[in-house]
Length: 487
Image (cartoon, rainbow, N blue to C red; front, side, top):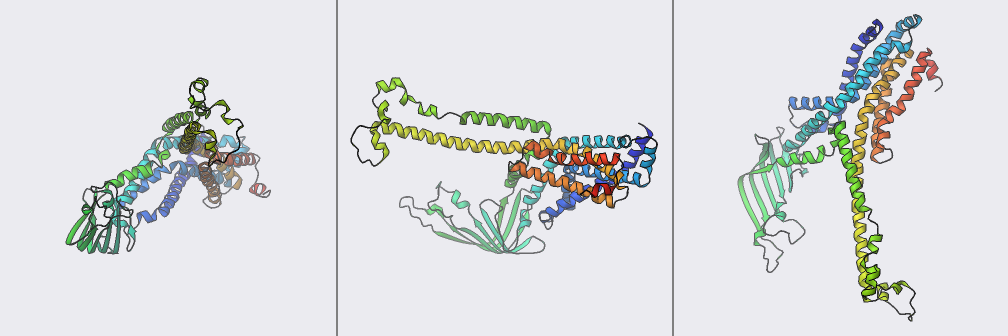
C-alpha cells in the first residue's frame, strides 16, 4: 500500500465511525418514535428496552453503513479540497481516481460487511427482535388494559376495567364476559346464534402475572357471576330457553393462560416477516420450493375442459349401445311442431337431461377448482415476490455503498468544504433519496407494478447516473456553480 492510500484511509477512520454512530442513532430514534406506544407505560425494565434496541441496531446495519460511507467521503475529500491538498496531488501528476483508491478499498470492505451482515447477523437479530417485541406486547397483557375500554386480547373473553390505580395492579369495577360456553358442553352446536350469558362482575381486585410468566391472574373481590346453564337444556322438547344461575363470591382468582400468545406471536409476526429471517441461500431454497409448488398447482389447474366434455357420454361406442346417451342429432334443429317448454332442458328429453346436468356439475367443479388454485398461486407468487425482493436487496444494498463513495468523494472535491455543515446536508439529501426509492420499490413490488428484481435495484439504477456525472465533473475540476446553474 502506497503512502497516499494510508493517508486517505487514516483520514477516513474518525469520520466513518462517527457517521456510522450518527446514522445508527437516527434510525434507532425513528424506531423508538414508531414504537413508543408499545414500550412506554408497560413497566418494561431498562434491560428489555436495551435488548430490543440492540437487536434493532443490528438489523439496520445494512442501511446505516451506506450513509456512513457517503458522509465520510464528502467530509474527507471536502476537507482535502478545502486545504488545497487535492490540488497539490493533482499538480504532482496524481489523478483524482488514484487519490480515491484508498477510499475505494474502504467502500469494497463496507460492501462485504453489508453482505455478511445481511446473511448472518440480520436474520438472527430480526428473529430475536420480532420474538421479543411480541413477548412485550403479549406477556404484559395485564398492563395493556385501559380504563373503560373492552379488551379482547384473550380468546373467548372480553374484559373491561372501570378504574386502574397508578401502580397498574389494583383495579375496580371489573366486568368479564366469558364466551367459552358456546363451544363446550354436551351439545356440539348451540341451538341459537347468540352466545350463552356468562358474566362476571366485581367491585375491586388485583391483576398480576405468575412467577413463571405463563399465566395472568385476576384476583376478584366481592363479586357476582351470572350465567345461563346449558346442562338444563331439554333436547326432547328443544326448549330454547336456559335457566339463569346467579352466584356471589367474596374472592375469586380468575386465571388466564398466556402460552396462547407465544403461538400467536410465531404465526402472526414471524411468519409474516419470514423473508427478513432468511439468508440468501435460504431465500433461494424457498424460491425454488415455491416455483415447484406453483408448477404443480398449474398442472392441476390447466386440465382442459375438453376432457370433461369428451366423457363416456360422447364416445362413439357408447352412443351405439346405450340409448340413454345423447343422440348425435340432439343438437340439430328439431322437425317437431313447436312446443312451450318450462326449461331448455325439457327440449332434450329425460335421459339427455341427466347428461347435461352431470356435465354442468363437472364444469362448475372445474371452475371452483380453477378459482381455488388461482388464489393459491397468487398467494405463492406474493411470497415469491417478497423473497426475491429481499434476496436482491442484499446485493443492491452492498452495491449502493460503492455508488455512494463515487457520489461522496467527487462531491466533496467539488464542494471544497469540510466539517459537518454543508457536506452533511447534501449527504442527507442523497440518503433520503435512497430510503425513498427503497420504500417505493417495496410498495410497487407489493402491488405488482414493478418486478422484485427491478424494485430491489431501483435505488442503484437511479443513483448510479449521479455517481457517473459527479465523478466526471470532479475530474474536469468543475465548481459547484457549474453543476447547480443548469438546474
